[in-house]
Image 1 (cartoon, rainbow, N blue to C red):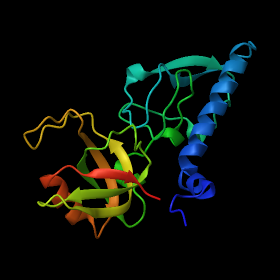
Image 2 (cartoon, one colour):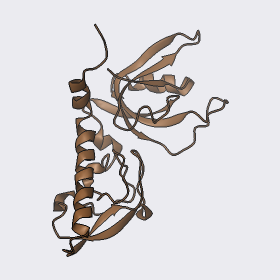
Image 3 (cartoon, rainbow, N blue to C red):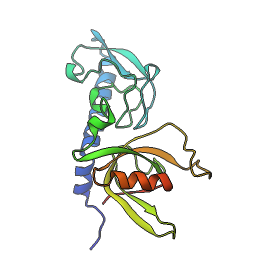
Length: 202
């Protein structure tokens, strides 16, 4: 029997990111349509350029465009976007809403029963984007692989360059990962000794 996740299971795992992405797409279409209708009554915040998932927003990343009042529900309109981290990729021109942010802090967005730990990954972040459920693997002194944590969640990537272990670290990435409270100490200990490999959980 194949161990690969079913389409339904994959859709359920990614339901939150898919919902946020669909909302972003719908809002972008609405803004484009009303922009040519001439019914302008207020300003809304949009992405000034394409922004990837995990990107920390600055003031220069957003712009204001004219749109009818009520285009975005009031409770989704962010008061201040600076410093917020995106949970999904946002194309240029997409209205920016609270639903796109990882949370006021990473800890607030961590799944129940987990804690967020910083780890060094040798897996390219393009293969395990923010929101991915992953298994973390390490290796012992003999080179034998072992599983350090299962069903961990990639919460964010750091922009700080990796610079440990005295080797070429151009392919290494610092990540903030939500792991089980029981696994946190073990994962931190392993990551301090060697980079971990993140494999999509399935």
